[in-house]
Length: 309
Image (cartoon, rainbow, N blue to C red; front, side, top):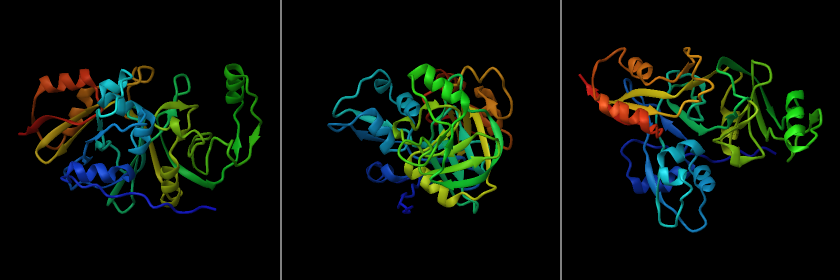
């Protein structure tokens, strides 16, 4: 039986770090910024406790594996010690598209913009691994299914047998072995779903065969709130730029090299493209030294690169 789960404390800019550290473990919904602003959330720090692991931390605070490691070079090097301070990178420049569902492969993040324009949800998402990349596209939700049945594609059957010696059936009924989890949202593009997963540790990584996996709480929230017909943008934007007050911010992620060679509106990796988009309606004094530093560091966190002219 589907039981609605209580999620989500709202985060407001200006809240103290102490308050954020207490609430953000359940936080995934933010008020939309005021007109002219483009940033949501705030980063904060936690102290590593005995028994903590990288997977536990990223799942607890709803961030992807890539963004947690990018923000914490020691973790990227495999160092995690009790007492260490870990940055939780929960501040985001909103993507260019701000309607319905927007999934950005470069940051492994799903954004859901509520129809009333008041709130935006931000969840880590698993997307296609190398050679099985999720394609960029504009689509829409055409079906919602609780306890979905999985009709196993032949290509996945062949892959699983060749790599793991596991023979998958043609049809997998609902249950613990079903990789679609408890809920699924079907896109108009045949074969592509946003769904739950029985492998929660893969959320926030490049682990799927093209579909998009969410945590149990995230897919529960979307299933209850996303209507059939909701627009879906799947993009690969490695850089995002936007305003908060009179400051211009830049957020740079590592691009997927097997996608960045085919640039288009949905697939943009260049920092200059992001900055140019942010300067369409106002001018700024740009600190290009800071831009080059962010481009080289690509830590996935917004940094001030300029001020309003």
